[in-house]
Image (cartoon, rainbow, N blue to C red; front, side, top):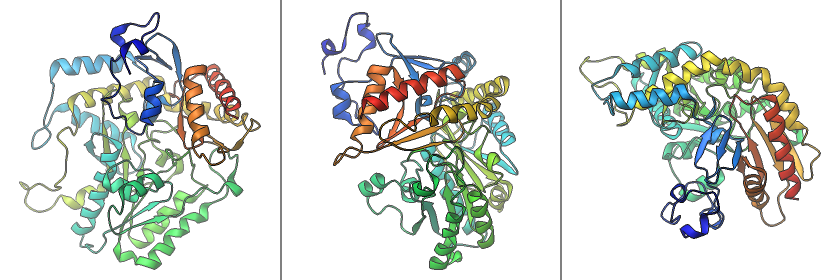
Length: 451
């Protein structure tokens, strides 16, 4: 697409790319996008802005990550100051102060004895890190036969080979083939017939955790290293855990000596009204994966929080030897640490998590008001997160969802996520009641336009 096709009156030419072809966009229908681009060039608080200055209400916190709102000055200033002080600091055999400061703050927020933090750069890397730690831990404690990893249908754990293997997204698994051997999956926790239009955690479904007993019976516990689940399934359409499900999963893991990993890349840092979903559900996993909200998306960062017994199992042998042969060049990058410290401070100063928890009932009622719109099959809400399942077009699954995405941006000034024909809204946690109303009104009109 040429520059002349994009520039309109009032749009700065230098704010628009002169060629869209070179960028192979991730998780995007590239051909459709490049025929009618959805470009944003600026952001502040609850809004993005197109190159011509049109405001777009952010209904998805960027990609589930901009929890405190866009371009908050304390975070911007911390990054600016950090860049002026040190561009890069290695964390292989060296360190810098902010890495330790941020790890301490994260550990203090985590429940129980989750008190050691291993940094990486994304949720995908966090998941692969946690899986590797789980396998190495089992070897370290003399359980080397425990090599099997258990995920869940409709789970999303990033795009690394490990994450796709334990993930349960059909398109990912079909596209990339066999992946890791020795992986099995729990069944999904979603059952529309018994859970439709649930606010928060559905009453039905705790027994789905018992599927792990069947898998143990099939493979034997002595072969299973870890189970990984999202407390709330996010990327496949907002799937809150049934009441009691996660506690039951913890009990079964404890019974058989299996590690339990929570992928909190989406749920961490306030999305469900707590620093971590583990706190909301009263369950202490052996590891938590985090990313996204730790830096409000301003600088890439992810990590794994491990319980004390996991960490301490590696602290043996000669002290000069590396205990865990794993890491990334940009683990605990100085700018990411600066952004993370400022973001956590902002959450505390503004009581962001408390605000989200208090707003949850109002948000749920507002989203549920869409249940009588044409073609709505189900609505799910938990925390400041909602999903609306639409009836697909005959013979064209996903088309109605894509049309909704297009109309939301171009006609309603709304950014949202789609998962097939499911519309997902996960706005920044600073959203007000008036803005919730605006978001739901826009979403309602979008649904009506895609009948």
